[in-house]
Length: 292
Image: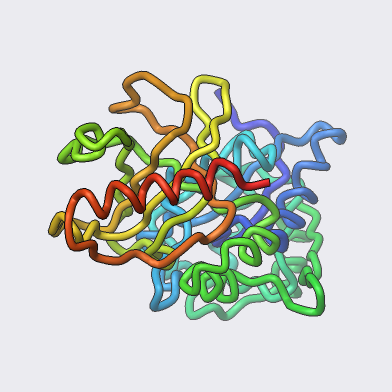
């Protein structure tokens, strides 16, 4: 089936923050003109734009947000290596006008493309006139005098300041990963948890305990999430999010519940015994689920 005429939002969209959402909203608004909203982006794992701290969201998490929260009906996300060598004209002709069949293209004012990032908004407008698409650039978004950026959000997450990070993201920071099997220690001490492992190269928020909400099966539950490496039990694996879901019973293995972080409670620490850990978990759960 031929691609319908589209409105294409261009960007890395790591974090899908308020600035990104303004670009995406501009593309989504073209649906009323008969254009299908779509996004051109790259897998975060394949780009050099993730910063030294890692990328905020995995490909699956980013695509989920783009589709469910930003109205994108089609996403083109090629490997960066497959596109970075194209000059600007080839990209505009064969990707934007060709593969995406774009009639409208929008991007941030500082968006760069083409081999060596040689092209910007003016070149994009020139190519649009030649290849049949209209171009609109979107200004930066500022919040309380701060330019919204993925770099600032990474800094806040690494500091455990999820409240400020959530404000720049436009919604709470989300962990949406497949639930994997763990040692099941939580079940033996009365606090069964789900384990969601971060990907290699992905940013991991500050190790510690967070008040959270978990969404699964069409319902929302108060929860408590520990991010880290479980030092008390010498876990030894990759950093993970371990979440106790208050009031939930059931098996979530193999599913991808949505865990959103609301507030940092305390740093991760090693306890002297399982009994000491159990007492602290009880206090953490109370602090998380009784949060206003």
